[in-house]
Image (cartoon, rainbow, N blue to C red; front, side, top):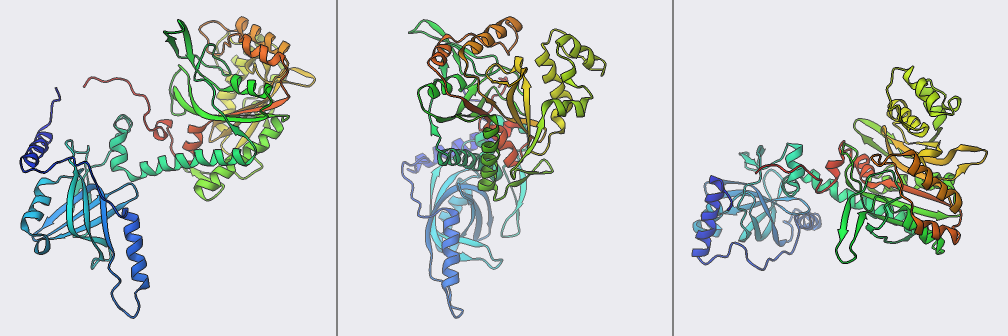
Length: 510
């Protein structure tokens, strides 16, 4: 049984009153001829068309939206309603609607209710385009007031209080309320959709085929992450929520689909942070007959295209810093970047033992059981990553943390891999993909040997993927990007939770 507040009980009483009077508080039908933005645009067009000081042609509209503010002033009532496009002022006059109707509006309707209002557009003395209401109708009664409050000054000059949200955790838990009261949040998620649309447009225009691969997989792989496990009752087997699309997309290259991409959800059973979430949107593409150098060029073209498309420029401001995505981006060899920021030349330390001693000499304490590759990754995160603010491709990575990348010719410890960094964090990851089935099988064996069951980097042996490779896989380049991070950058949001409609939250006692 819901424990209603005193305000909710008052609104429930209003619902009962409406039904006693034969008024349905949740009618089945609604009418709308214009959105708020369309109504204002039509009225402005009529004003522009008027000549010789004549009044504009009458613009009749029927609007629908949520009441966001209301104030009675004797025989007049001013209100604002908000729809999906914007906000518009309503003007009600007792002499025209009658005292009963205006009293009904003032006393029965509440902030948060959805209404329908019909009338004629006009401009008030202070210049605000407004609907002069001739008729109105309740569309949906709000039982719960939208949370929190702040002040707003109405057209009349009066100050009213209406809902707003400030607490980030409450906003994430009640995204529906956050969207209802914060227009800038709605704009963030509209821009998110525009970013996804622009990514698809770019790849489609470059000959890539969008495909779908299984979310439930009998063997997880393609990334260094711990999976979520579920059980298929009919098949009587455990399955994994995918952590990556990679191994399935590369199977398609074997089948002569030469350029493929997928954008969808991946799931990783790991910690959360301002840039990590357990469920996130990933973009991956695979490109036959390309290498990581070609993928670098396509990546900078794609991201700059998206930035231009959604923000109108290849430059954007993120957390006070201007980022410039204009190609070409900076290229930096990992070995050079680590040497410049940490003072350690990893090429002089071919073993994990030697590299560990060099790091310890710098006053740092990595896990002494780490492989050489993990120690290099430690140096990257501790010293180099925070310095990579402008878009930068960091390239040539250690082999033992890159199990699906092709070795650099003449350097068996290094692979052709790059990561794109922006604003001090990783945006994307790409390889010249390993297409030697014998080498790939050895990498699986090494991963099982080098990492314990508790470590997330372990890659299980995927016999079916090896079988596909043995049929012959063309040389190719592959790419993966966390789309949520790109949305963060292009909407100037510090936390990934701010660009997810419904981020996970710990359960709380009601």
